Image 1 (tube, rainbow, N blue to C red):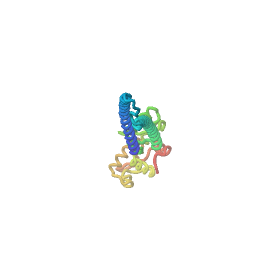
Image 2: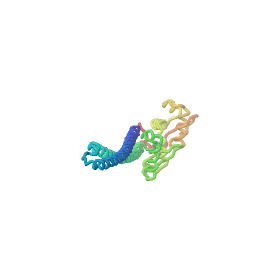
Image 3: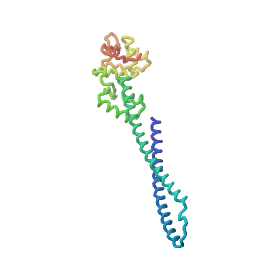
Image 4: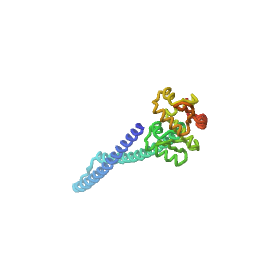
Amino acid sequence: MKSTRLRKTLIASLLFALMLGFSVSMLLQLSTGEDSILVNQVSSSNSRNLAVHNLTVSTAPSNMITSVQLDSDFSSFFGTASLVTLALGTVSIDRKEERSSTKLRDRIINEVSLSPGIHLRGLHRALDCAMGALQYHLRNLEAEDIIQSFKVGNSKHFFLNGFSDDNKVLELTALLRNPTMQLIVSETVEKGRTTQAHLSRSLDLDKSLVSYYVSSLIKADVFETIRVFGREKPVRVTEWAQLSIDSLGLIVQ
């Protein structure tokens, strides 16, 4: 992104320099035009004066006329070249911006396809693009039914359209985008059933953090408690959640 901004700055500077050169060439043309008029006036005056004395001389040096003509030709050429370069540069910038816009749109679709349930901040980090451009394309892609969004808490998560029609599956997928949540679920899947104390020890996580995530998973019907005697109730993954995890490959081993 920085290199793109640098290229745009350099192109803009070049175009400004060419426009300035064009302005100078126009002033030069006006100046040489006045000089030509002056030479013609001097030539006419000298011709009349010399005619009285029946003399035949050159009224203006040929190299002066040639110089004026060359200056005029160079100014015209430079002005034309500046305009052509300006037009080509403008077209080039427009095409680059169009290609960049199309490329970002494709990258968004590809990233959402590879990481279903990814949230806005995750997309922003993965694509390393301007947030405004990202949100613009996301709105258009949703309007075109290419991607769909699902909100969990305060975060909006994105999927390719048709990923699932079940909101529970969308919520499970979005929850597992959280690395800590995925660790807890993965450990529980491996053990069959576990306790919060075991999760805290085995994953080296604070007990309060484990309690918060386990409670969220129970609320989402991803975990269920097992009735046993004792103070702490073991938890396990619900049947539907296990089927979804297996069929969609939601846990990275």
